[in-house]
Length: 348
Image 1 (cartoon, rainbow, N blue to C red):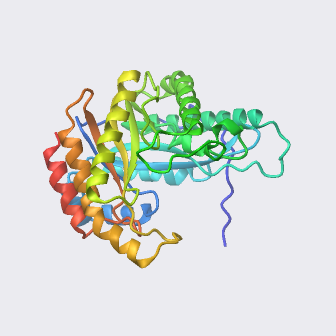
Image 2: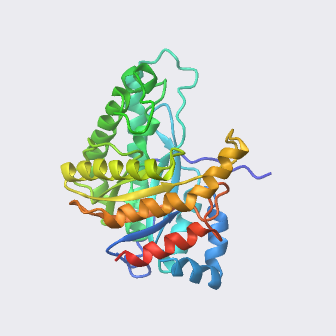
């Protein structure tokens, strides 16, 4: 068995030639995208076949997301063990004529055996690791003329960790019982810290990346502040709701994220529509799985319908769903695939 040894990221500016003429940037007024982190190899094989490529484009897709996972280390450094595969996937979809959305993704952080370390120092080192990784990934994005880049994926969610200060942990407050309730103080604090981190690293990103920069966050919240970015992208999921309640929730979330976008002076989009019906490892009874599988098409229909109907300013400028092949989330050969295609045709 071959061992893949992780490389410690130390920056790589100037080591690779920019492929500006080979991979020109292609921007669309509306981002219609696919995020496939758990089945990237299946998607690659499918897209490499002419019939598969044609089917993806007939769905209306113009953007493919490429996730770039790294490991934050305890000393403020980071490991990016799969740089070659990240570059290969970017190059694959650029060659096929898709815009590419590259997103950094911090793997789960553990404080290891250092239980007595000051949580504030641990947080400081973690955010430093994420910053250093974000800069290297921005350099990769610039090398291949990537259209869109996010330095992190749902950073605020990774901050709900016992290694970090207690004010960031929802369990220390009163977490909301339903998705309609106001967020707890732990969530509010994580949104504040993540927003500050994103604003603080922006000049460093702009020094090396000339494409569009996206702040990809988790759930909706009215108080994100990502001034200077091009887009604010957030995640939607079903919360196992029925159709009327889900429509009410989506309308609420679109209003909240639009408020954050207004406060930040940026555009907004759905960065990840996540409607699973039983991913591997989930402890879910058969009845719930069947309910969610039947509801998936309705979750897409409602969230896309509310997207089209949204009449406030700023209006949304993109919708990315997950996933085409991923087990328990897949939309290939389902009613959901047709639903998405019909709505994508309406988006301009």
